[in-house]
Length: 329
Image (tube, one colour):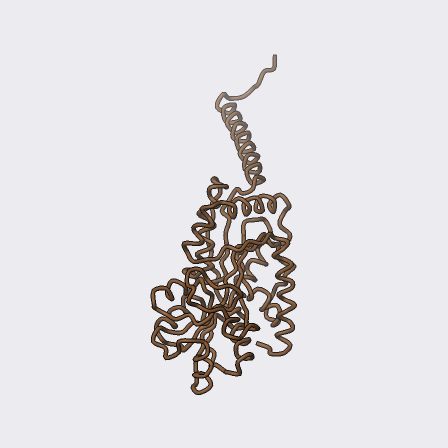
């Protein structure tokens, strides 16, 4: 038999310290195990634009459906606007590659900042998860504008000084404007906006003469008679408003532009994290609720998988490099 000498109170203290040590060790082990299971903390979805715009709306629709497939996960939409998306893109690229910072990116701004030499990132900094939306560009004027067609816009602009709103220099809006000016010989006084919400307000308030935007941002206002969309800069008419001609129908087939939106994470994120997120993206985009909610918010669901979107982005950057060489922005 082993005899322990000492005061009984001292023995109790030793026993309590021993128990505390065991509990602490087990707690740390459990915490380590929990952290190894992804996701174990809030996943931020970074939107490189202001709250209230179409990209922000897409992020919130995604979260609504994603929680069905990762019910124990928490998501937070984090808006990082500035410089036509550049500040948000840089934040996403520089984030810790642990899967807790997803980016909802958009074109043509992502490669545009690279082409212009302003970006502190390159396309290879991102792992592309998917494309979710494709949103054709439009030309839109206030409801009280004397202009009622694209032909009238061209003739009126040649005779009068006209202001045009775009959502940032180097954006799809800006490039659409450049293509339109090149094709028609007109020239606008360009007024860059800091987001689609600001653009919408300036057009509806009659503070600019014309705006180059995306159809999702103005289709409801056109249907309600609050603005006039003169043309869609894509190949197809929109079933929601068949009165709007395509740009090809009015003789300017070379003036085509659209914006896309999709999800990325950092290229160095662990493979198991990428697998979880790619499965989540597949689940969400296959869910009828997701497509139906997008349709209700006037957003066009046009899906590409991650590898296809990466190829598209690389080709888009090459096209923009050619355009930038002719007319830098």
